[in-house]
Structure formats: C-alpha cells, structure tokens
Image 1 (cartoon, helix red, strand yellow):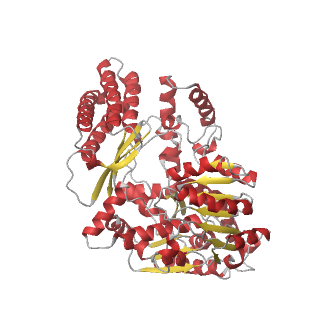
Image 2: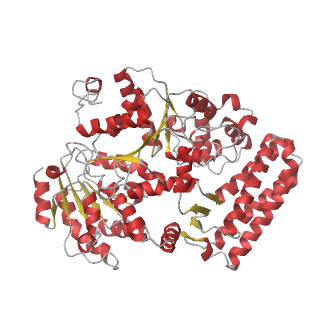
Image 3: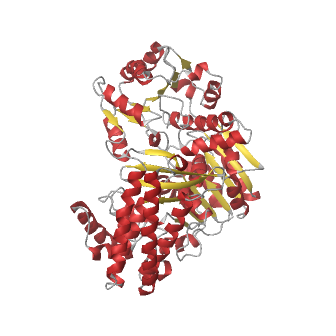
Length: 635
C-alpha cells in the first residue's frame, strides 16, 4: 500500500497534484489487512487524509465482493462516478462496479403511466414537470431522477411517479421487464464492487424490502461504511416503525386510481377511500396546531386524540373491507389491500397499548403533515446480530468517530466487539493555518440574551474576515434571531437556511466569495467549501441534543434506570462528535486558512470542556480579538 500510494505509484501518475500522505498509506494498509483476514476495523481519518482512495485501492485489489456504503446519495454519486473510475484506471484492474440507490430514486414506469391516465394534478407546475419526465423517460438508460435537472428533487411530482415499498407491485407489475429498479438490482447482483448508501444498507439489514424481490443487496465478503458516524441514528429509524399522514393519503390516491382502472363499477370503494382522506386532517388537528415533537404518551389520553385515532381506525377498517373484496379485480387493487392491512397494523402498534420498555413511541407534526414513530432505544443487539449473519470484513470509517482518543461510544452504539482501531490525524497544518477563538465575557448559553451577546462579539470577527463565514446554530430559533439582527448590521451578503434550497445557497455562497451563511443541522456536515470563500466558522453553542426530544428523553431515562450516567456515556460523546463535524467545515484543503469561533463559555468553565477541546485538531487558541484581526490581516 505504501508503494501504491507513494510518489511513484499508479495514483501519482493518474491524479494531477497527488501528494503522498503517510496517514493515507497507514489506513490503506489497515484496510487491506482486515479485507485479507476478516474482522472489524474502526478508522477515524481526519480531513485531508484521503480516506476514499485509502479504502478503494485495497477494495479493488481484494478479489472479493465488496459493498461500499456512503452517508448520502451525493457522496454515493461522487464515489461511483468520480473516485472509483480514477482508482480502477490507475490500478488497471478489471473490477465490475455498480451503483444502487433506494427505489424512490428511480422512475417507476407503471406509476408514471397511472399518473398520466389519472389526469389530475394540483398545479400547472406539476403538469409541466410531468411532461418533462415523460420525455426524459423515453431516452434514459438508468431512470435515476438526478439525471433530469429541470425537475427539482424536492418537487411534489416525484412521489407520484416513483414507487415505495408499500405501493410497488413487484413481479406482478406489467412494467416489470422494463423496470429501472430491477435493472439496477440485476447489475448490483453481478458486481464485484457495489456502491450504496446507509439508508439502503439499513433497509436491507432491517428486512424492510419485500414487494416481490427475493433480496435487496447481494451477499458480500466485505462491507466498507464511510461516514459511519451517521449509522446509529439511521439504523434506529429502520429498525423501528413509522406511519405518516402522507402514507395514508397515498393509499387513498392509489386506491382511487386503481378503482378507475380495475373496478370502475365499484363506486363504494372510492367513497370509502375518500372517507379516509377526510379523517387524516382530524388526527393532525388533534395532535396540536404547532410544529412539535413529543412522546406519544403525553397526548395519547387526550379526548381529541382518542377520538381522531378511533375515527381513523374505523374508516381505515371500512376501506380494508372494500379492498379485500376488490383485491381479486387486479394487481393494483390487490396491492392496495395489502397496504391497507399493513397500515392498520402499524396504526395499532403506534397508538395502542405499549408494553415494550426498550422502545419509545413518539410523534412529529410539521405543517399539515404528521408522523407517528416507534424507535428502539438500543440497536446494538440487533445490529450485531445482523453483522454476525454476514461474516467477513467490516470497516467503519469517518472523520468523526472518536471521543478524545477512543471509540468506545461509537462501538457501543452498534454493538461492535473485538475490533481493531486506528485514529489518524489530519495531514493539514492546523498549527500554522488556523486559529481557535473564544470570545470573552459571554453569558451562560441558557440566558435569553445569549444569542444577542454572541452576535455582538462576532460582528468584529465578521468584519475582520470580510464575510466569508458560516454561522452554525443549534436551533432554528437562534438562527432566526441572528438573521433578524444581522440583516441591518452586516456589510456583506447574508444567506439564510430555508430561504432557498441548500444546494442553491451553497452555490451562491461560493460564487459571491464574501457572504455570511446562517445554517443549522444540515450545514454542520457533508458541506465542502474549499478556498477563501469560507474562512471563518462560528458555532453558537455546544451541540448537546435537546433533552426535550422524545427519543433523547427516553434514552436518557433508560440509561438512568440501568444505573448508567446518561450525560457521560451518551449526551457528551454525541455532542463531541457533532461539534467535530461542524468544526470540520473550516479547513477542507491543504491551502485553506481560517478561524474557528466557539462561543459557548462552558468550553472553558465546565469539566467536560476539555473533552471537546481534546477531540478537535491542534489549533492555536486565543481569547483576544486582536489576534483574530491580525490573523486575517496576514492574507
């Protein structure tokens, strides 16, 4: 591995500007050893290590089937279309690779046809988008919805022309032989290296996919999980259950469509479906007008909720009766019947008696929608069981897995045992190119005027940096307060999360070159802005998960009942990893320079502050604004 990633190796000849890095070579050697001997490896590779090449080279040379999973679809595309071809060409190995995404990423020809036949769309924009999709469908080879840039991925037309586990007809679909998803899965089964994402990986582990397919992912001898810090939360979702108002509405819509196609004389079926549609808003209203997340037990006994659940159950049962009778009329109605049965069972599980203390039931309302959820408090046993059922090499890697110097927190959440561990510092020169600034005399973050005080402290920093900054907040409330204050006091362009789509904001931020962007959770990770456009990252508070969040609240209580300290073994390590992600936005390339501003005074006043600071790269630290101004004056 040292030779392959060395100054005279194939990567140096293939990649312009390639520079050998000892950290990259060490990681590649460790990955190669695990691939050869099997077992589990955890690797934290700091920003700039080049971890993608470090695992791709041994993976392509392993002579085994390898599944590589990434954190997002964007990273999945980057790995498959950019990084993997470079390594394959450099090594000159005849490895067959494939890309596989979740079914909602592929156009469904059957649902496209059904939507066109239905002829009822809520807006002229969707009518125009449907025409574009129809034209694209005739020439697309993969059916991947990212191929069509003039229909945004956020468009409400996509749920109408893509399938879900619920509404896919599987092998009974008349379009099965021309199905884009089936084609992608066939390619996946024949691949030596398969690139997927964590949602798909966890769906497979949780055996979520049934709908006519024998298996979702092929068997493999090795699994490489990049951005592995995201796995525990994603797996918790897939090992649980959920039911949304949107799923119920989609059952109504599909029932109406299939009734017109397969049972036009069964008018009562349509009436019962429409009755269900009327009952959905009643439950949303019963859950409260405001956007909210809370434990189900907090509202389960309220009369409005009890009545809404009872009404919803009743109309869903009446629809199920009619669908049972209609199921023999056609495959579409048969599928609707199966979905009705499944949704009814989920509704009972999520709102009926709960006797399992290892699970938490909660709900979330947003706008006119709602979701009822059940989440396991500890996924370690089931995740470890699934790993045991798939023996081979398991590699978990990310830039943020360790707390301090250890991996105990991450390993415990997934039940990892007998693992090898490797922690590699970033090769970037943080001592020379960065500065960590703690603004002095800030109040406790719990006081009402904290955000206002922080903004007063960072305005001179933004002046010194000439914009070019991210302000990362732990809450939307603080973000909105900052947006209102800075709108009148900032001499640089102000970009605010929510005003435009994330990709559009980032494009504008890069192109302006002197903007200040305000963001919350989604901007703390997976954002790569290289160069001078981002020269300052300001983080308002230590990112402790809200104890009012229903899942966090239940996990804290569960740990407490087991005699463990929830702060030390859950809340603190989770916050450390999140802070490392946010701080990691600052330095993305060897030539980057920048200032990290950590406003929270608890970093210096509380015993746990040292845990956060020891987990960050080795940056010079100051409490003097003059040093910040001098740092930027050197540019």
